[in-house]
Amino acid sequence: MAAASGGSGAGSCFVLGASGATGRALLRELQARRLFARVTVIGRRRLSLAEESGTAVEQVVVDFERLSEHAAAFRGHDVGFCCLGTTRSKAGTDGFVRVDRDYVAQAAELAWAGGCKHFVLQSSQGANEHSRFLYLRVKGEVEKLVRAVGFDRCTILRPAVLLCTRQEFRPMEWITQRVLGAVAWLFPTAYSVPVETVARAMVASVLQPGGGKVEVLENKAIHQLGKAQPQLGT
Ligand SMILES: NC(=O)c1ccc[n+]([C@@H]2O[C@H](COP(=O)([O-])OP(=O)(O)OC[C@H]3O[C@@H](n4cnc5c(N)ncnc54)[C@H](OP(=O)(O)O)[C@@H]3O)[C@@H](O)[C@H]2O)c1
Image (cartoon, rainbow, N blue to C red; front, side, top):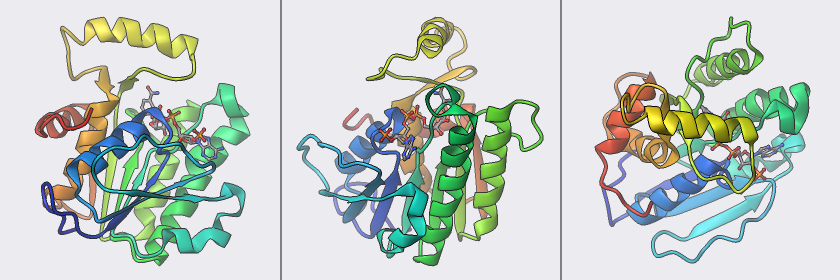
């Protein structure tokens, strides 16, 4: 992707999960940096996006249960960013697998078929298709499926616990964030990462030369890549 490092966007990207904690930070970063001439948010509902200076954002509303009928939304993008995900408490076990694995894998296939060269996937620390834990297993499975699609480049980010302010209240996550927010003073890159840093790393991964067909960025690498970027729009 021949995106400029600021000011003169070229090409097109799409964002999945743009209404979420990381997705919103990513969208702000993309708008502020103006890397792409066209940014398309693909989601299940229309968002009321704040008028911000920067790249205009198009929105396409899709039915994720009939994603193949929305192939046009995935056509003609250079880069696809995916921050999609749910939780078992919100969607149940089947719903979690459906969103975090099936929707993501289907979207990746449509993107590839539509000409996308670089897919940037937000996965999780500990992702492992052989894990005993459903969450980590599903993350490992989706990584494998996305890798197999055949993008010229695939960047997989494995953040630790996300530090963010959520619109919804998730009690366990709230407690974990408070604890790890404090621990972060001692071990800043070990157990947590702010969503803004993840967003900057996602964008930076597009700008830096590819280190191979598939790149996996663990939490420390996300911190390094995310911090290397100027603090724009977050
Ligand atoms: N929380 C953590 O500490 C942590 C750590 C490591 C990795 N991760 C992973 O990082 C990713 C992003 O996390 P996040 O906390 O930024 O996400 P989030 O705030 O929970 O947002 C999730 C996004 O997915 C969309 N989504 C959820 N269910 C959907 C459905 N049934 N159909 C269509 N879209 C749906 C949401 O859309 P709506 O707004 O329409 O619901 C939203 O845009 C997830 O895959 C998560 O598992 C999280």
